[in-house]
Every structure is written in structure tokens, then in C-alpha cells.
Length: 518
Ligand code: GAP
Image (tube, rainbow, N blue to C red; front, side, top):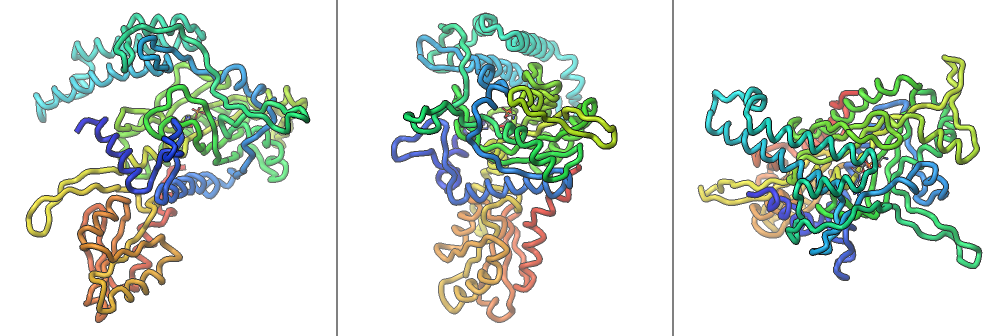
């Protein structure tokens, strides 16, 4: 099945099974804004817990805060967002559709990558076991040609973005005959800069209301609280401050479901270090964050680093962790070495001294910062895209059946356990209820007695419940149940008093946390 079709099905699945709904749907929706349903909110909370615990439980020197969304407007002047938080946009005159110029070019670059992968796949099929992929990639003339074009285009775009050369960006689009996906034409307007911050007013107009922004990142709430946390927490450098919270951006190109939203959530951590040690810490956090991702078990080959060619105005090193989504490798998380830019700017704009006295060096300085920044929603999409699978299975009578299953890591799954009486009589529902009561405070359980057992399994597969417990007549005699494992569909008979231990071990987030390489 084409990857676009898989993605469409995934979006439909999220809606049908209570994961994600379009916002304000009964009023025809609101572009790039989404609501999380009954299972979505649980998965989201579990992702946030996995991140939060990996920061503040695993690192003694990382603490959390929760700063306000509204902040003093000068903060956004100091951070550079008022003047420079822009996207270059371009309109197609025929379709009247608006695009980000850099995204159009990036999509074109991705086409070269697709061509390369197709060549490799073709050759693999042709040569079978003898195929030497590395050698093929290094020597095949077509691959080398695609590679060269890709690199040329990438560096030309990076230069145009670095120089803020909007005419050149447009010229790249024209020269590469990049067409509008809707009209198919190359009839483009000029490229213009568009600020992504939403603004509103605070205070009543009569009192003289002032313009205020909805924060476009949570990071600034951390920077302006640097001294508060450092002093009250008696924190010693190196130390970090973590925060999870909403952010808002008036994205021009809002597509790919919850990948790019106008209201979203971020999990950010700013790690304050001695000047000069920042690149070492940058390397360390790159590794730790990659390990956090890969511990979820979706396959190391589906992740990669993408080092930035165009560094943000505040960074001296930057990389993205990318995941292989159904629409290609895309950024899930950004890791930036932000220098002392933000603290220095807040010192300058607030007139307050923001420095750290280092008792070991016996001197004061402005700390340097390593930032790890990941979108909760984008991580949610990554998890659900990796977990979504359509499988053909064989029924007991030998006929084929299909199932859609969300192979979510058990620690993240919204519902851990479904308890099902085989029939709705003979005391089985009561026994099932008793098991539920014993387990419900530790594991999110669901009781289901409707339809055949096969249909009930399918329903639980579709929402990603890792374990189903069936209570049958035998249970009343031997106090044992059948546990059915979602991924293998294997069944096992276990004593009821062993259930807690099995479930605890298999769903405990601590088991994931222990595997992260720090
Ligand atoms: N403080 C740095 C910062 O905000 P960013 O690369 O702009 O950096 C960090 O954003 C992460 O936030 C991204 O890697 C992505 O996961 C998420 N993110 C950014 N914009 C988003 C949007 N419009 N919708 C959903 N997630 C977004």
C-alpha cells in the first residue's frame, strides 16, 4: 500500500477510535487545531510522563517548572522572535495556495532521496544475496548524480536562508521547476517574510490595553526564571530546567495532521553549562535523547540525526532527531547549543544582572545553554505511526482475517488490560468484575462483555491494549484466567494472583527508564 494511503488510514483510525478529533468539528473544524479523545489524552499523558521522568527522575540536576503562557511582551523582543521569527512564504497565482518556500524546496530534495532509495531497492532485488549496498551507493552513476543534485540544492537553499535572500529562494524554485501540487504550475509570487506569533491584548482598552503574545516556545519561560530556580533550588552548574506546556504558532503550511499545528505542546529542557564546555554537553544530550527515542523499540534504523546547515540566530550547533514517518524522515526533536544568547539578551533588555557565581572557578559568568526541544503532538504522531499495523491473520478454522493493531509500547498504551467474561452468565461477569476491582487502581482496565471474544480482541487491538484477560467456567474452579498478548496473539493460562506481577513488570515505565543511556 502506498505510504500516503497508510497515513490517511492512520488519521481515520485516530478519529474512529477516540485518539484525535479535528477541533470544533461540528462547526466544520479549525485548520491545524486538534482535540485529543479519551484514548489520545491517555497516550499523550504517558508520553509526557516518559519524558518528564527521564529528565527529572533520572537526572538529579534537572528540575521542572510550569511558567505562564502570557509573558511580558519585551521578552519576545529580547529573544528575537518579534524581529526574526518568520517563515518565507510564497503564493501560487493560479491555485491561490500559500506555501513555505523552504518547505517546497525541501520536498523537492526529498524526491532525490526517494529516487536513490528506489534505485537501491531495484538493485537489491536484482542481485539478491550478493548485493553490496555500500559499494552500490558509492559507485552507481545515477545515484551519484541524484546525490550531487541533492547536495547542490541543499547548500544553495542553506545559503539563501542564511543570507535572508528571498529573491534567491524564489529563483531556486523557478530554476528547479518546482510546481504547485494543486495547480501544477510554476506561476509564483515573490517570497515574503511572515511572523508566526499570535498576538492579543491584555487589560481593558479603557485602561490602555497592551499587545501581548501567545508564547511560540516554552523555552523563554525557563530563561526568565533562571535566577529564581538557581537561587531557590541552590542549583550548581551544570544543571537543567525542564518544562512541558502549550505553544502557539500561526503556521502558514498547516498539514500532515498533528505534525504541524497552530496550537501544540512542547517538552523543553534548558541545560546551563560553563562557557567552553557546551559542545561536549551538546554531544552528551544528543546521545541521551536518541537513546530515549530508541528505547521505545521502534527500530534504530527509523531514526537519524540531521545537522543544521542554517543555524538559528542563537545557536553554535544544532541537530534534529528525525523519524521515518509514512511521509519520509522528518524532525521530531531539536537539540541546540544556544550559547549565552538568551540570558545575555534578557540581561540587556531587563536591566537585571543574570549571571552565575561559580564557586569552583571563583568567578561569575553568563552560562551557556544546551536545549532539547520536542513536540508532544509530534512525538504522539511518531508513536502512533510506528505502532499502527495492518496484519493478515489466520483464524482457528483456517480462514484468513485482517486486523488493525496499535503495537504501542505497553508502558505508553492508554488501556493496559481488558477483562472479558467468556459469556454473560454463570457468574463469569461477577468474577471478571472482581478481577477488575483488584487491578484497577494500578492499571487502567476496561471491562468488555459484548460480542464474540474474537470481536472483542479486535476492538482492543485497535486501541492498542497490550493484554486481554478472559474469564471462563474453568476460572471458577481453578482461579486461573487466559491472558492473551496483543502483539503475538499468544494465549497463556495464569493464576489470578500472578496477574498483578505480570502486568506490573510488563507495563512499568521504570523498565523503559532503566534502559535509557545517560
Ligand atoms: N525552543 C526551540 C524550539 O521551539 P523548534 O525546532 O521550533 O525549536 C521544537 O521546535 C519542536 O517543537 C520541534 O522539533 C517539533 O517537535 C515541535 N514543533 C514545532 N513547531 C510545531 C508545530 N507547529 N506543530 C507541532 N509541533 C511543533
